[in-house]
Image (cartoon, rainbow, N blue to C red; front, side, top):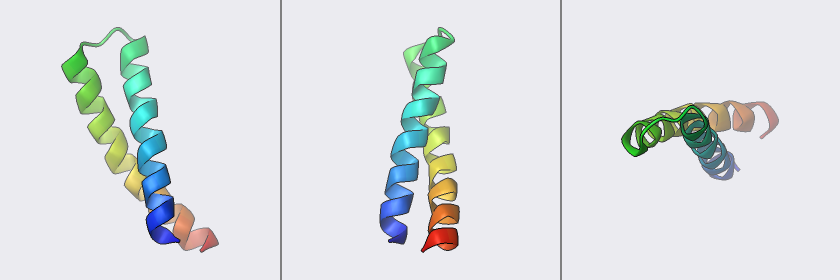
Length: 54
């Protein structure tokens, strides 16, 4: 269950951070870096969700 939550959190947060960077008119590289930061946040969010509901 924890792996699924972490995977989902990483996917959603990574895409959301990429979309935010794209909406702000950032370059490809900046959006890519924001996506990486979103992945890190997503791991944390997924872990917290798994700990709470798992």
